[in-house]
Image (cartoon, rainbow, N blue to C red):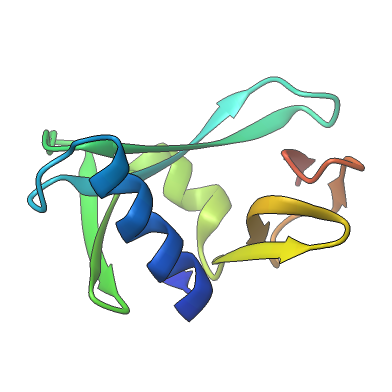
Length: 108
């Protein structure tokens, strides 16, 4: 399961509206190969739910995750930072054994 912080929830709802997606679009979180550490996080909005997807709800948002990505994301918190060190979404992943400096890729 993935949890969403209050700050991330506000930013996600704002972003979904700004991009013109209707409220029935869910947050899709996945993991893809790549990045300097081997695996990369991928965020997007999606109305499709496939046979290999699991659906969760946290903090008022529905989250869609494919079963393969879920293995890497169990227990992860999606947060949002707007501090001096940069602005953007951050994944706090207890499964990651190494992350890159930018926080966009990881390995297990």
